[in-house]
Image (tube, rainbow over all chains, first blue to last red; front, side, top):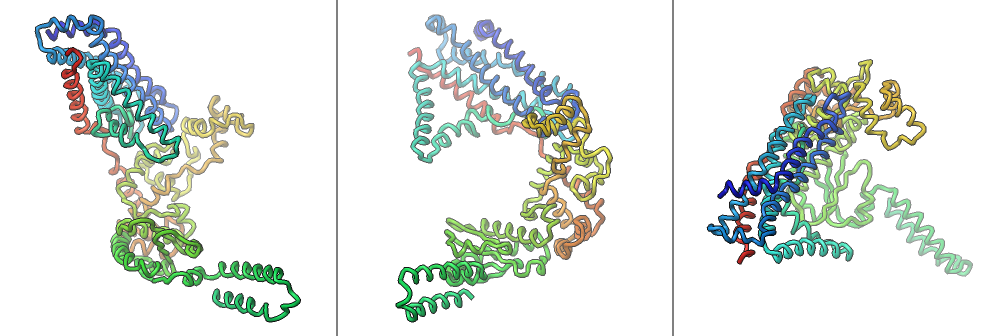
Length: 218
Length: 361
């Protein structure tokens, strides 16, 4: 059963996964080249590291896009077919969901591997000055975990009802609106700090997506 | 003195109505008295600030680590325990204190809001600490250590302030400063700093501004010079004084143009924070009397004072310092194990939430 579901999801998301893998391979190479670590004419290392950091912000974006793509691809056939196919299967619903989820998780692997290989190629071609280190493995691991969490979050949202999605998005928008209104009223209460920011800091779910993504660092 | 002036004011105020009352109108007398008051007030403000404050509050004088600490009498018991901790920490970190240098050095501690009497106390010779809110002994001791360091820097000579900064962070954690110094050394574009990183100890002296630059090639490699000029001046390409040389430097790789622009830049020495790590290393090598020797005489150059403090030649001191900086290299960046497990757990939570969805019910 898993093989069939994996084949179906793989076909649905093949193009997206391929494009994401190409992007994942190119981002480290672009980061290193743009920062000037390939054939350097001089060392303004603080500036070069700043450019590596700014290019590194593409990694979490790619993780989010990949997670979104795979989650949508996992559920779009069922949404189109009004879940008739799923309902006819002789397995419990939760089992079916787990198989879908696992198939999407496996499809993350090629992109994670592309990021890792791209990082290895990029840092191998670069001239790394004394005192700096390269982190292709760390970046790939972090990318993989970030993509996994992004995929799982969107997967759960897509598996839910429209009402659930509306509640979640409505809550997010409401919090932001409340903060805006408080600021307009010159009331110094940081609602975001107590509601949304804990999601982006450990042990929040989206910690992996934030912070500095440094392929080359001290 | 202030009391004399105020008494004079009173006498003048009383004497005025007794004589010439008929000849002078009330308004004119008031104007004259107001002017006289303003003049005396200005004189009072130029007097000893402590004498002015003593008219308003009762001050207690405490002593710790060579400093004279003044505070209002009601808060003296609160300050006393913090002073004991401060003195113990100062002696533990500095060893024998340069008491001659600290003579007459005052720290004025005010709890709560400072009124005009207190703010007049902020002079070049007095450090002023304003403590608002609840008092924490360790925080107070930290601020007192900072005040002691500032006094030492101020009295240690202009050369010391320029080299190690006016705040002289000798009480900062050496491990933290050394790690920051490692990062600074690694990311510096200056030739002496990169040579120091590579093991050239005499270059470390140049990078720390303890020795003059004698390398005819200058502070920067050609490529680094271009990069530094491009980063610093990229928003000034419309300035006619800069534009031609900028284009020659960045586009045509004309090193002479780059160096002429770099002459107006500050010397790319390592920061005052790095300088403090050298002083801390000299003190660690020189023993209990190291700081006392360093501050004993502020006229010799800094390198001679460091050698006297450490008890070894500068090259030996800088060799030890460089080894300490290399040992302070930050740990490699890793994804913490707890973050890895947390991410996997959250993915499982979302999967369970998806499996329990009511969508098909």
